[in-house]
Image (cartoon, rainbow, N blue to C red; front, side, top):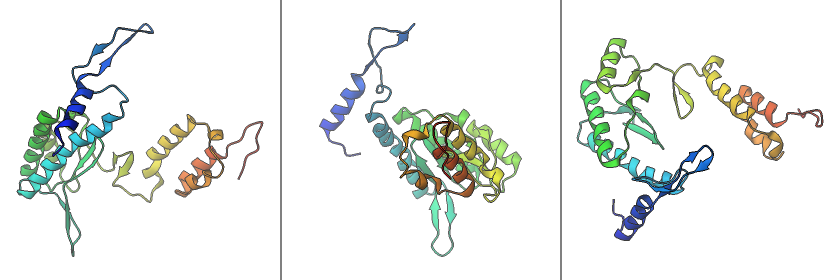
Length: 223
């Protein structure tokens, strides 16, 4: 990718010289060298992961450019073809229904594992179809060794597909918000920043307002 030799040497030393210890009954053991990778929480970790994940982006662009993979086309006057979306380790691959695409996707995922060392967890992956028969999805899921999902599905914590005008569509997100807010303390947040967080939608706003302006026996509630 064009990185200088000195920079690659620095990164190699950061990865190869890392050590770690294990807590046994509350006491740390002697440190031992790691065969590969960084310490947990190392600030270099997300940056190096993005560099490795960029290899998948290059592979997908190469497949699409050589007409070995057909993504999904959006728009009519100025159509744009989208083959994949990446955010950290969450990847969404968009494609037309064809066995050629299924075989190409399986090949590129396996090919990506070898040089990057990032193994794709097919058991946690899902194959979701829109206007595709269940029997075809089941066969394709067996080829990819992944589960068959349905619409709506969750990507980056948000539901994709379905009727967004129905309250039931947002219930999983609301449950996550309530779960996160229940473990926080609103008294540590400034009053100036609270209204901005609450301006999302009426239902989510009600959840946030109940959290930000909650009271106790010592403080009055604000409405």
